[in-house]
Image (cartoon, rainbow, N blue to C red):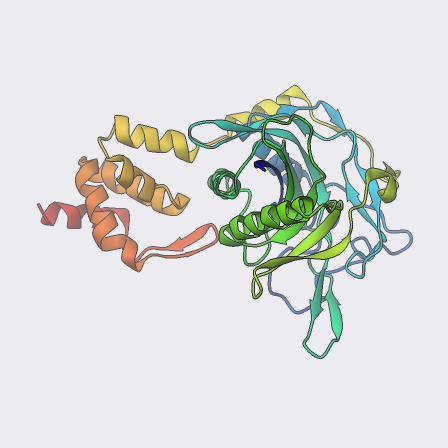
Length: 373
């Protein structure tokens, strides 16, 4: 029997603000546990949220770069569920009235559609030890996120990984997210189902939760597709549920039955007014949009004469890209500078999120390139 997979991805990307979405607590990663907290992000009685304007600007910037339609008015809602890392007992998110709808992710030869982008706050983090004990760090609770919800337009694990790479690249070059999968600032949930080839009805979907590398996304989806095939071909029924990924055993495992919107008991957040985005604000954000990496590669090839492979290498990090452009401007020979940066400079570059340590300045690099003629 021939089967085909249907895959949709939900990406949670932390916005690079200095403070949280609804309070003034710092968002810095790696601080001592439970030190960046206050009555608001702890959900204590009487504490009221105030929306972080910079988070809104970054969220709108993300949506515009992905071709979304910005909604003039949107609302926050309370998403009720109870976990140790959610001190309020609900997550402040957007439900039926998100700030952005539609949009696409460019996969090179084609595009994958987006359903929506909405803003929400992150939860804290549960930590478990081998002895069976658990503790919770609430420093992350309240960190601003955008959730980028994709349509089920993907059909292979490889397409899913390419989708994530392309999306991460856009966010990093916008400067709104550092793309750090290991620290969880960019993470993915994958909705996976299978159906008979040629069928138009979707199968029962399973959600794979919080996968933190492109390699694991690809592996986890491939394993889950095979698991669902085995279930159906043995006469069983795929159950709608949330599953985790175990890299040690290369298998997915059941976490819990999948909740529905009714389970979360959404209702409008009474402590926050509607989020109104006027044309002046949106127009100002649109004017800040930089050239995206794919456009820049095309320009490097067409205007500067770089080979496609060189253009790809020199647009892997925004600091490296800016370094090359400045050095090429100073020397006036982009191809020679590109060769020098790739062969001599990049081997000593150390990147950390959006920052990068480059051992020479663009001026010295352009002079070194000239010496090597």
